Image (cartoon, rainbow, N blue to C red; front, top):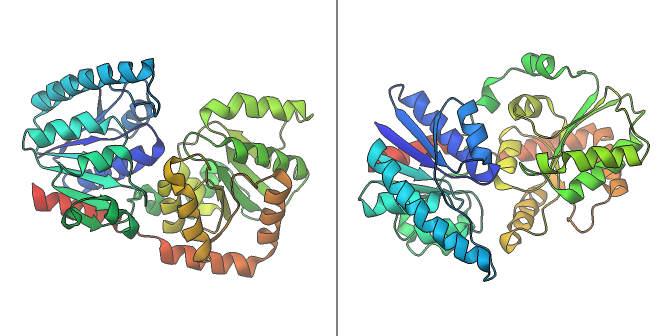
Length: 367
């Protein structure tokens, strides 16, 4: 069987696509899997690292306001449709699976028009524009939130699956993770990240946290800035007189082994992207969640409120977060082990480990 998977632009679209691809490969050793994205993109870097064939097409996202870029995007869309036709004709897939992002638009639409079975996966409570358009053409829709059903015209196509989490998160052992990351098991280990692209407010606040914990021998902090924020982050540390970080504080632009990090984390500080939260809850981790305040429909705040309401984490709004506030919340939680344990239990109740299984069963139903 030939499976074509497409989706990209952010880790929120790429991670579920890779989780689905890995599930297919696990269940069908002879499966031929092709991932279609855009060149010079996050997916063009991440997908080959996971051992999947990758093909890039030309397509560009639309600006919300009419401009010269809108005209360029329309041109790229037609080029993308042409590229998609060529890829589909050459690969001849038995099914096409899209996980959102503008790149999957021309690919899934072309497949649907050619009567090839199609399925899309929506990660958020508020579906993205591409998936809302494609929902009228595809055979099935896998949704992660009950609330998202109302945004699709034909609810009979929708199955509630949750967000798929890569099996890597469950396969790794704690001893292996401690060894790989060289983390002292006797110290509190905190991971902070603002999603795959980073988050300015979170980064700015973590600088304040670092200042306050330079000499904290009980803490190990692992912060992921996002590639585009890294140089500015490190420069700001120098501006504040921090030229060399101590061994207990590690700052990186991107991290490829999140399963190891989450396996041994005592607390996660994160934005409220659906996939990151799916991974956090699947691992049963307590969290401090800082939803990005500039996302479409403010969907991250809805995600974060669900975490807080369940007792799995604490929410700090993007506009309210400061280094002092974030540090106070972090230290308070780390000192209250009973509360951390309760938050962890609540987090685990929210987590869905079988989302990949449900999506794979949907695939089997239509091929």
